[in-house]
Each structure stands twice: as structure tokens, then as C-alpha cells.
Image 1: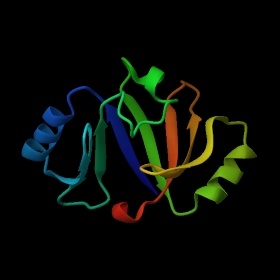
Image 2 (image 1 turned 180 degrees about the vertical axis):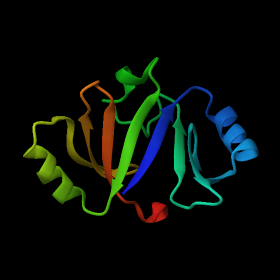
Image 3 (image 1 turned 90 degrees about the vertical axis):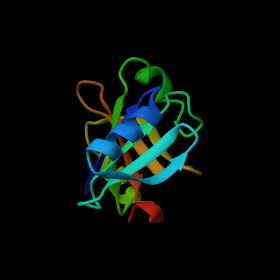
Length: 127
């Protein structure tokens, strides 16, 4: 399992520069208003920055992130099995299993504090 923080901010470029210049990250993928950084010493260590109103952000995340700026993403090899497991648990599912062009197959749960956790089928570019 890999845990990838997604930080929602209007300062994507500044964050990209800071993490690359000072913390050993490099750009893995970048689109307008969205960047995925991978640490040079640990390929499994990633962080994402995205503007809140980006077309890459599912609409359920938009209202929650103005002022909060963080969700957790967990990459998984079998999102269908994970979805079936979570449906059988007393966990609040806030986004049912969907497939999106950029985000791939994923669903979202909320922790007891309301923090959103997006569980995503591992995309080939992130393996």
C-alpha cells in the first residue's frame, strides 16, 4: 500500500518548486493546475498538489477543500475487492466506485473526523 497526500492549493507552482528545490522531489506528472512529485531517493514516496477547482478534481472534493486543502489517497492493486470490503464495513462511503479519465477507478470514504480518503486503482504511470 502507498499513501499519497493530495494537497489542494492555489499555489501549485510554488509548492512544486519548493519540494523539488529543497526536499529532493522531481516532477512525475504535470498538467495545468496539477502536479505529482516523486522523491528521488524513494520511488514510492509521492505527493500531489492541485488547484481546488481543477477539472481533475472530482466534484465531491471541491466544497470540502476550500480552506482544508488535504485528502489522503491510497493506491491499491484491486479497487473492486477493496470497494466490496468497505461496503461490508460500518464506514461512510462518500463516492461510490467510479472510473474517471484522469483519476482512474476509485471510490472515497470518510474517516471519523470527516477527512476524505480516496482509494484508487494503481495507474500504470504510478507503478
